[in-house]
Length: 509
Image 1: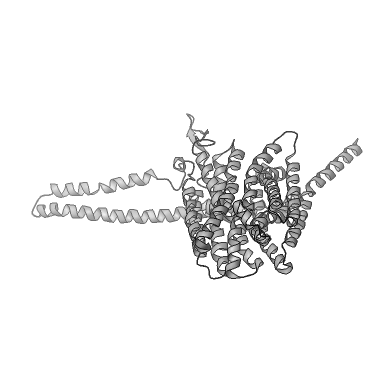
Image 2: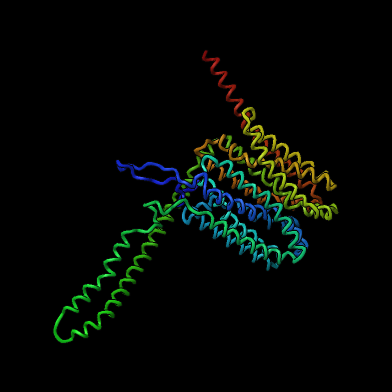
């Protein structure tokens, strides 16, 4: 998906015929690769987990600022949406600075957004500090975590990505409990301040994203050039002959010349040091300029060069599905805490939050659906469609449940059916092929970000009009059905093409 100076999967060695051969890197699929998986796992906990737990803070913001539910929901949706929408543009940072620096900077920006949000005077202030700042920082830390796992794994890439993404479920459970405790003990402002400090661990996760031996690449612009070191050596000893000439020189003033030799040598070294420093600055600026240009070219060709994907009718239908799907998964996380309060179920929900039920079942669903989809007699596409139908059915039933037990069952269904997210790369590959998978999946994630950005505010706006969340879920379920209808375009097109092919074969015979 992205290529940069860190993207070194193999080392080159010269054979006796001076030809370059590929040698597998020792850290591919083993060694430090599992530390990268661990780093990505914690990134999912800190970013995606905390975003799925924002319903706790949404209730606090409603009580604090007394704004409409539609307006307040924009804070959470901005953070979720921007995290995914900026993904294609974060690729420019990755190509220029590398995954490690991008993730560390993202951790700092994300922490800054949480801390600044603790001093919010109104909801509009949260739009900038939490929605935009924290969301952009989340995107800068999240995408490198996904990209680095892909770079370190080849044979076990699916397993590694699956293990790292389970951090979302664990994070949702842990962050929901943590935020509820912090808000109850210290208030939501101090809770956000503490969460900002916790988010600094993203910098530690970024530091673990070690590039694959960039120092071994002779063409790496960041490596040391031995010719520069050799060029410095003669200059550092250039005062020796001068000093020797002064000592051999005769006549009056010989002692004065010998006394001035150390001062003259130090001046020579100082001047040489300034020249070397200036040369180093110019070289660094030149390398940075070349790296930025190269990174921009790779980013531009990787995304805007993929315009041919939009001529694929099935992939375009898949994009429309992504625009409607993700919001139906996000809306329960944002609005369930308030629904619990409306139904007077807070005491039961405090014992075991409904969002935690979704998160825990979601973890196991990814593994189970992946195993089922890998069976030779099962179609991945059919599993994907059945999971989508189950999710939209759960969205329709949820408003009819007014007890904790009923809501818990529906939340378990939502968590299980949403496990289809682990099948999205496989389905995308079936639609566009392996050569276009990276660019196509980036577009799908961006479409999911747009869905997450618009879904929760839309549900809150419907509540402000109808004074009920029932219509919010019904309308979102209908929109999700529209997205599923776009998914059905794929089998319909295949059936039409097969019928046409049979007809043409029969006519030819």
